[in-house]
Image (cartoon, rainbow, N blue to C red; front, side, top):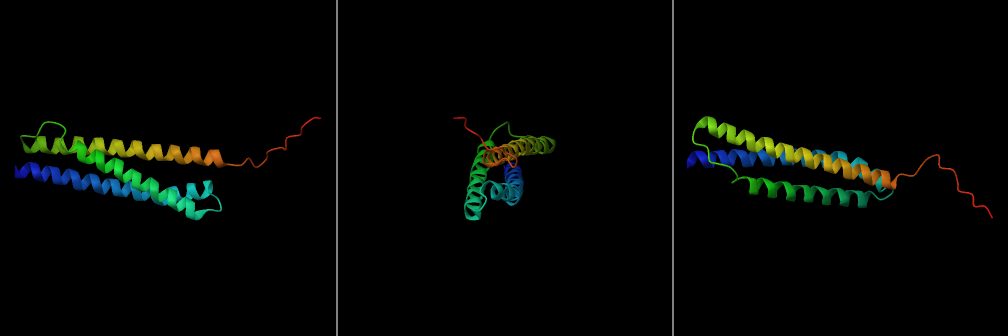
Length: 126
């Protein structure tokens, strides 16, 4: 029992640390994209950036907690290491997917709000 609690604790702490690191990286570097999208409105860019980070935390921490119980309990030390490794590996894949989803969202927002630099004015005949 104590061994399982240690395994759960290690998985939980490692997963939360990875989530915090990815969230902080997205928050710091995503701000640049959002400032470009919301040019002239840094308050709005910072607000959206913060809301995205909160959503990222909620989704990932929810997944981490739900995934804690999934799978058979390990019976040996080797099983325990494999158990934690497979769980952390899956969490890392989910964090990577969330990271690329955020990048996709930022990219689409940036493209949507981009103004063509060399656009020619439309001349209406008539």
